[in-house]
Image (cartoon, rainbow, N blue to C red; front, side):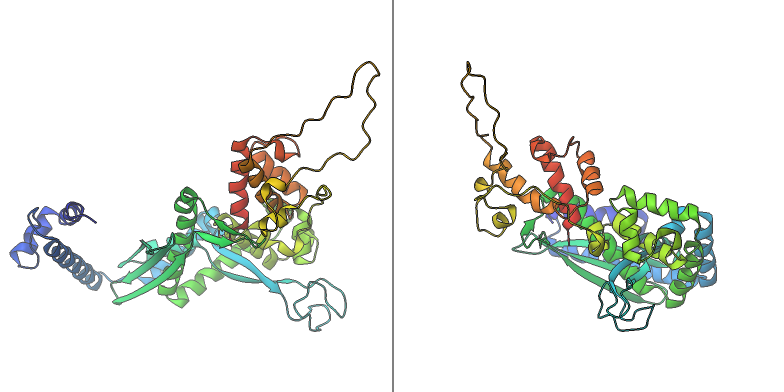
Length: 412
């Protein structure tokens, strides 16, 4: 930060009355434009120390009422329906080790080796980002914040979330490094566009790291009682509730068949805990912590694609460096051409002259679309304004938007 910027920041923070009181007591020195950087920093540090001491004094004089905080938090669940529905998250972490039907060891397989029944999925569950924000807003005499620090020599950033409890004089800090590059499930290193990294990836990870530091700082009893109250509301099952959940997942690209295969039962037989896990999965997907592919990876069936023309490399070879994007050509029609009238010579077929950048983008998009189901493809194309199944003929702007949305689905 420049000297002028630092001066403005310190001067803004020091209100006239507070500054005058602090000056009278000899605690701080009023900033002036003639000060050097060291004096400005010292003045700012003195002010921060003064503010912390003031807040600690207020915390001692007005301690928080934990019973009232818990009661108000639980009342919020029953008052606001959306608050209860967004209270938890759930992420599938693999199959159960023991088959619930026969008790045999499953070796984490989808089908039990002994009885052949579908092995249910295990879930990692916890309180959501929205819940953490709600509880923290009621937890008096505390403060929390996040800062973003660039990492020198890279495009990565370091997120640091801090929670201060002035009443107990405790501070928790949770750091997290966020990289601008990642390896996709196809093995290709992808660099996230700068605007998407700043506007989507960093805010998403900031919310996650802030949730983690808040929940780490709150009492275990408060979190346990809140979870129990939310669980009672979220495990109520009925045909209407199940119908709403199926519709909700269809909007984000997951079919009823995928849900049934994930839980090993038809939707009309879903239990209360299954509904809770479904709600948690939906919250994790909407919060950017989970993709549909990660949530239903075992239940997604690849869509049949047109074969590559003989002798031409496929998109996977391009991504693996075995061929160039310019060598990728669309499959040619192998059917015999119709005979032209004798009076007219046959027209010569013109090979399309495609821009190399466009061909390279198509080559990158192709393997990312292959794992999608047909309903997911239609929903994705519709959201990008692409009409028809042949997305390769879309405009450059539509292809760019399609690429960005596919990056969201494959972020890890």
